[in-house]
Length: 233
Image (cartoon, rainbow, N blue to C red; front, side, top):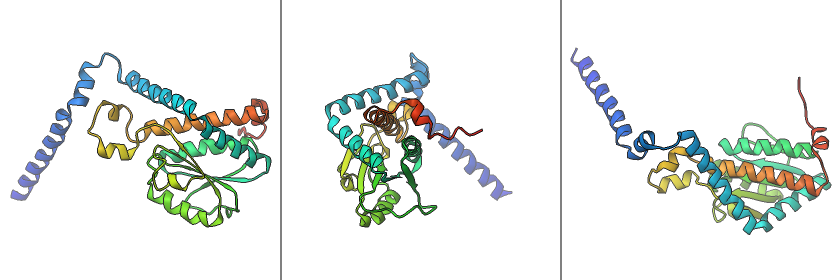
């Protein structure tokens, strides 16, 4: 009976602690009480602002866009293989880009530790998506492929990171990542766009923009691209 009582007291203390943690987070409490707009609108405005910052950044550093576009044009025209390497939500962004490259007729593979892919040949292209540039599994898998001397494109928020330094061309995208959260106190933006959200959205917009660059440069319209698309049932 005494054990049960102690357990109940402990559970009550833990519940109170969880409740206090929520209440004491002034930034979230204030956001819920005093926001003059619905949270979804505030969140989407934050996302749009980050995309605008990236547009300005790309405009100032368009030469990196050109390098990525020209390399992929060369791959398409010479029927080179393209590999994409990413994890987590960034992997989903990479898979969407993989689909678009396949619409150009590219033999594009997604590198994962759960299955094998065709051997990388010298001068094949690997596109790496990593907001922090430090994701251990991405670093480990990339290093195993470097022996084949591929051309590496890195998309990251930290070009001077260990992964960023592997790139033959490294594209910097603005957007908070998990690394930022470790050194920032919690603020409204961390609630409205948690973890790597801003980077992932910027990466998706950037890669879809590269698709548009390729389509225009190669004189491909939507109809010709969809000829490579599996319509399904």
